[in-house]
Length: 126
Image 1: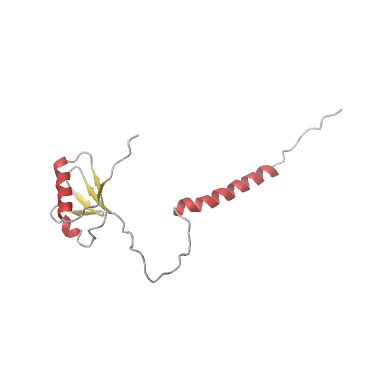
Image 2: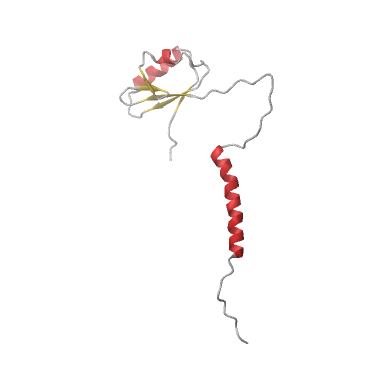
């Protein structure tokens, strides 16, 4: 009995598996990039209340304050927020090296202006 020598590899099953994996990756990649499934929403005469984006307030260690990436002073902060609703969420990105009293002063200024939805951004502890 003579054993037949294999001189080539059959790559067709490998190509089939790779095509299936490619189809799965391409299908799920569209959900990951867009973050949601696209649907064509129906129209209604009465619309729901729109959700507003949070307002970003950044405080650096040296005391500079940025509202939506624009430099503002502590005194003009409330004037800069006049166009925002009092129900808007304000997220404070505070540098860990800033003075605590300055941070409290900014929070006090915001609450005196009627803004009560204030959040503090932080990194998750590992």
